Length: 74
Image (tube, rainbow, N blue to C red; front, side, top):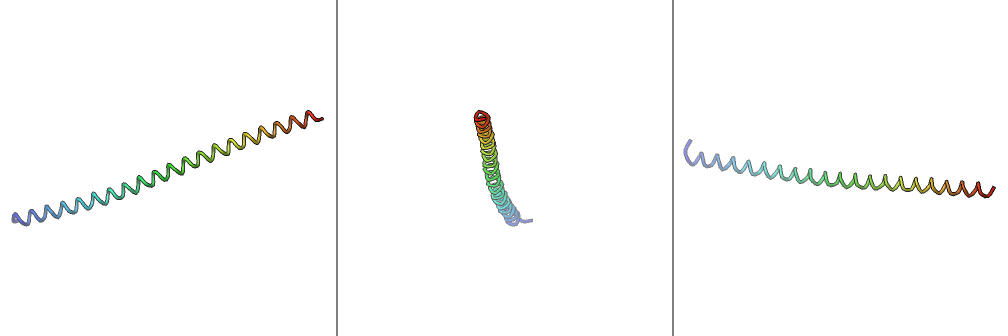
């Protein structure tokens, strides 16, 4: 293989490697974005669960107050 052919082959290999790196970086960006969205969804779900628990606790407290009030009225 001549020197020019060797340089061209190395140059082509370098171009392929850069394209592969660029593609990998784009895929990684997509994965990072998806992970961020998953974290946001999980945080929102956790917040929703906490809110439901707080509402349930409040409802039970209200039921207890109403029950005590009805007993005191008897």
